[in-house]
Image (cartoon, rainbow, N blue to C red; front, side, top):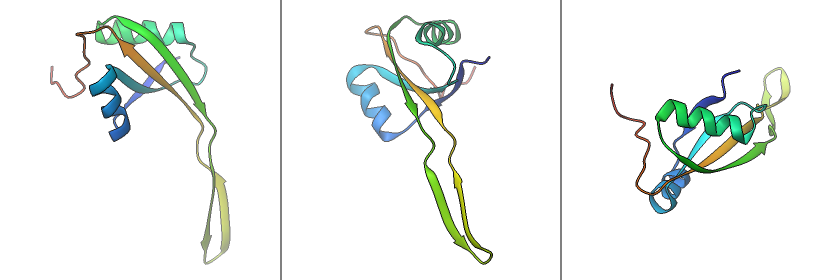
Length: 96
C-alpha cells in the first residue's frame, strides 16, 4: 500500500504553510496516522510534530446530456494535514 498519493497545493493550504508550518497530502484511505507520519519522515527527511486526518465522501454529480440525465459520484478520499517542527520545510518544486 502506497501511503502518500500526492501533495495538495491550494491557496488555503499555502496560507496554512506560511502561518502555521502545515502541509496537506492526499493519502490512502486505509492509512492511519502512524503510517502517514512514517511515510512523510522517510520521504522528505523531516520531523513531523502532528498528523490530522479528514475523510471526504464523494459528492453526487449529475448533468444533462442529449441521451438524458447522467448521474454518478466523485471519488472519496482521505486528506492529511502535517505539522512540522519549527524551521523545517518541504520544497515540492526543487529539482534533484
